[in-house]
Structures are given as C-alpha cells and as structure tokens.
Image: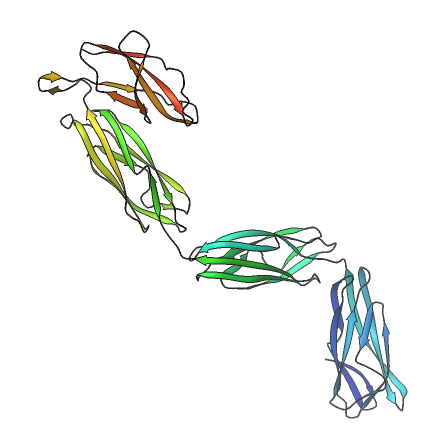
Length: 416
C-alpha cells in the first residue's frame, strides 16, 4: 500500500495505490473501492475532500471524519465516461487539527472512455430436439458485436448436463460489427428432457450474453429394413450373369454396424457391396448387389438360396431369399425332345423415371407383336421357343406412370 503524508502523528495509506479504471464503455459506469488506513499512532482528522477530473464521483469520505490509529475507511470512486478518450484526475484529502488543514494528499485516478460494445447471438437459443443417449449433435451459433467499440469475450460458462461449447480461444476480441462462430454440442448421458444456459462475459464493458439450450435424451434403437425382401432373377443362361440390388436402410436412431454378409444355397451367386464392417447412420441407406451367374450345365432348372446380413440391429440377421432358373443356351434333352432358349439383353434407358421393360415377340416378319413379360432386368431368357420357327423381338421402356416408349430395334432368332 502507498503511504500518504503524515498529519500530526496520523499517517494515511491507500489500497490500491491508484485507481486505474481501464477501458469503460461510454454511458456505463465502473466503481473501484479504495481502503484508507491510518497507520499512525494518533487519530487522523480528515477535514477536506476535493475531486478533480471530469466524469468521476466519490463517496465514503465526508469531512469532518476522524480515523483512529489502525482504523480504516472505504472510499468509493466511480468512473462514468460521457465521451471517448482518456480521462485523469484525483481525490485530494486534507487533514489537520482543530479543523485547520495542515497537509494535503492527492490520490490519482485514470480511465478511458470507449465506444459502447455489445454481444448478440444468432440464433438466440438452441433446441437440439431428440438425441440418442451415447451420441451427440452440434449446432453453430454466430456471435456478433453490433456496437461501435470492440467487445472482448473473456469467459464462457455452461450449465446443464450434456451441453458443451467449442470454437473459441479465449480471450477473443470482436471489433465493431465483427462476428465469430461458437459451436454448441448436446451429448445426453441420460434419458429425458434437459435444459441449460451458455453465458458469455466480456472484459470490455459489454453486457453479458446468455443463450438458452435444451434437448431430450432418447433410448438408442437399431433396426434395419431391406427392400426388396426377396430377389427373383428369372431365367439365366449358363455362363451369363444377372445382377439385382437390395436397398438396406437404418430405420433406428443409432448407428448400425454391419458385421458380415454371406450367401448360402444356389452355389452360383455372388455378392458385392463392401458392407461388411461398415456403419450406416440413422435414416441412411446402403446398396447390396447380388449376382446370379449359373455355370454348371448339370444343374439346369430352378435354384434357390439366401443372403444373410448380420449386424448389431435388434432384428438381425436380415435374410434375403433368392430364386432363379438356370437354362441352356443350346437346349437340353428331355424325354427325347430337345428344348431351346433365346437369350435377350439390352442397354438401359437414358430416362431417369424408367421402372421396367416390356419384351414383345412375333413369329411373323413384322407386327403385331405379343407381349411376353415385364422385366426389371436388362436381360430375359425365352425358353418357350420351338424348333423350326423364327422369332422377332422388340423391347420398350416403361416409366412409373405406366407410359411406354416406342419399340426398340428388332432382333431375330431362328430356332433349329
């Protein structure tokens, strides 16, 4: 503490030794408490108190005041800037005996008026909604200083279980009209609704800013759906390949992890997806491609199988049934008669709304054509042909409204 002048045997000291208010927003106030202690051996008689300097006020010291040895008094000095810029001054304290001032002590004060700063947030509150326990969700909030002076954010405090912030390295100063992003996160650890507050304080005189946050913790669920639930490949010639797709969707509210994908039966199918070991987020989908490629001429006719998808879903495993028919390209003998098959394939339509294809056939040189089948595939095996006949085929594309394209170019097959 600083010592003042001796007044008789009284001796005044001050803490703090000077009042430095720093930067204070114009239109606001800041007060510093000053402790005046008599460290002398006799009573100090304060018979005068004068204030110098604009925009300051003082209270707590009133002439004629006696401060006994070892006693102290508290003087409050307030700085209320009305304009920008530095401002200095002092408090002059006179002491004496018999109301006659014998000495003066000046206590210095200083401060700077700065343009008002403020803090705003957009949005002003955040409702995270339903969040599964064990997961987290984040949202960015833009902080803005709409004032004319700089605003320094000195601290960020959080109340409420599961809420946190990131993105600010404190202290951070926002210039006038400046912005800064703050990330708010909700990671519930318990089931039920919760709320809290995010409070930002400024060391530059801007009023503190409070954001209200809320969210609800939910029990985690993991379910998987598959569409379609079964695949029918139709007829496929030995040595050819028919590929169909299955869409898998995580219909729960927690991440779903695929632990394995396997195929059984048929003995002629393959799968390609890269799904094993992958994670599907809630609401997201993944595609599983299954290929029917019969290779064994000794196994003609219907073939069956299934694909099993193992995961951490409560309805695991998911099973997709498979059906297909293997046919010979050149025919095979049945009871002395020889059967034949015509294998057709075509390029996909360039239209985005196509849902299938119609296959037509005629035994005459031209139309009329008779519809054979509607297929969602890009190939078809016609095993109803007969020896000695010539067949002509065309294909049309069909959209979701049932509208049909014009005929494709025709192809002709002569059956021996």
